[in-house]
Image (tube, rainbow, N blue to C red):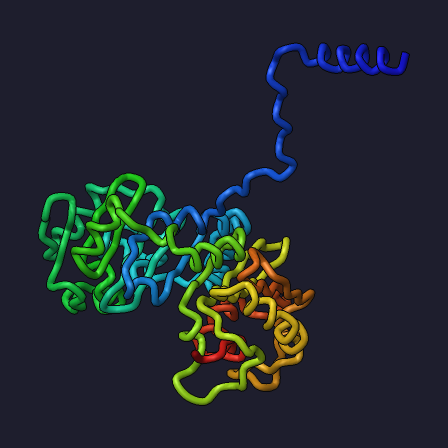
Length: 339
């Protein structure tokens, strides 16, 4: 009887599914959605000089947090504008180049003078921009408008010196403006064969930063001053450092700092030192102030195995641009050990 029951039960179980293939179970973990920063990296052509500094800004996100023009203007202190947008919020720039910051939604830029490029997405009037540039001595080369030699600073236009060589080469469509210091970089950005979206370290840094209104990504060694500086908290050598700000206006301002290592073991080894030492550490450029005073709710954790993510809310009285100041003046040197 037991054997017969087993046979009958087996038949019932088999019959429940019939001859159809079983439906695969849906994954409980959804695929991660790429952030605007990650998407923007797919617009930036790979170049060793460009990789020395990558800048990102989500101006649309910032406008949503600060809908009033005056408040938005003040909030721009928290955005690291590339040379190609350095004065784009003023009338002189718009008269000279035919576009302004109001038409820009997002940008991704890289490099330093004399090798730099910016890809700006938004709403532009190509005929107006081309007309203004041609009036100022630019020459047409297909879709490219060019002036002077590669990397040369334009000293003849009203704002040429401010823009350095970042607008020496311009390609513009109704939805995108490419500004570069060299013809090679400008043309490479039209349909890049290889972009920074293929760089594992930079992409991990971007993914760890999450959604931000502004960010800068550099080789970690560039966070250290050329000489002197604080003794690092860390023992291992990081490959990439990234700093970003998500400015939510009334919802608060979150600063994130990311250290990306080549090996997961190195990130794990430095985690406790960063978590324990950073809150009480003084800023190199302001020894009377500690990281714990600049940031509230400071937290440190591993992300993606190879990255350390430091996150904190910016104190209400702090300037929105403090995140970039810390990177520029060497405050973050204590997070990076020289190779």
